[in-house]
Image (cartoon, rainbow, N blue to C red; front, top):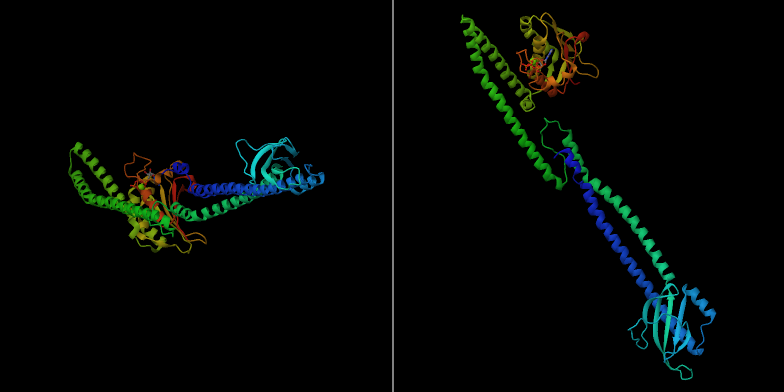
Length: 469
Ligand SMILES: Nc1ncnc2c1ncn2[C@@H]1O[C@H](COP(=O)(O)OP(=O)(O)OP(=O)(O)O)[C@@H](O)[C@H]1O
Ligand SMILES: [Mg+2]
């Protein structure tokens, strides 16, 4: 998966939070709605009971006072007590108006009133919503002028009731919002903590270099263990496939070396004995090509040996860089003389320790051989090549430098030449472009820092390998 497509796919955190918060939100809304219904039902019930009590009281009063309106005092008391406007109407058994508001809303059509059973309904009166009750009330006092089933309508505004519901709703909404916010914060923290192992896994994979195919050993939660196990299995397969490839290259180049050496020896022998000009030219080409192919087989084998898979079995131990560099340099003096190069060794250890703590002699010899060979081959005849060893400092390990005063390498090409099969001068048919790649691998194997710099006075090339402390 590319970085880009990974970025566009949904994040796990967003998914988890969505699945935690959405149901939470729905639940909160559900609870709020239920709360609203409960509160308004309760308020209705209380108001309805009050309405019945009012209806009975008002009708008793109307009958006892033989049809008088409620006194203003009682009306005010009612208003103060209920904080609502109360309207009423009393009708005699024959339907004749006895007292109260004659314009009060009537019982909705189609409803027959059972004697003694109150009927509640919502209505609109004087531009306000009202809750109303209508009931039949039996007057059995023969001394009163009204006798039989009287009908009483009582309506009451719903202001206070609605206020109560509104306040209750506001209170519970605020509580729910606070709860949702806290729930969201805890969900965020929980999800972040839950995903922390994934982040650790990501960092562990990101830190890996391409050479490091060891299995991932971080402790992971159960859900991720399978992923890590599959990843480790893939790493193991990859490693064995790379190792098999390396082994194949090493075997192939090894197999090539002997027949190539034979062809080269035969061609050189034939060249020495050839008298015909054309034969000589052809044989010279064969000798030169076989020499180059033999060099390629050799360098391929060397590269396979120093590559991460090849050097797995290599043992690292204390290695004296000064002694090693001196011995490799002296071994290459004849090669230098053949190219008319003055090869020198510059011991700058100044009595300091030049040991590499974890070094491998064979790999280091390969490195030195390639660096000195380059300096000799690409240096200008008659010029100087210096191999220098600088002793360990307070904060730095020993340093190896191979410097020449030949044509050097342009700064822009210095990264490129470290790659395999890169040659800057194709006309120079001596090499195959693997030397510096081998040097880089050996430097990496020793955690050394390799840099290509200008030689003395900006002339030539200086390759510097700084070993760790
Ligand atoms: N000291 C040097 N001065 C100038 N150019 C150099 C020097 N060392 C290397 N180069 C350039 O860098 C290229 C890569 O060098 P490298 O050693 O990797 O390959 P090579 O020498 O061509 O082949 P081989 O694998 O046989 O050594 C060379 O072809 C050459 O052009
Ligand atoms: Mg080379």
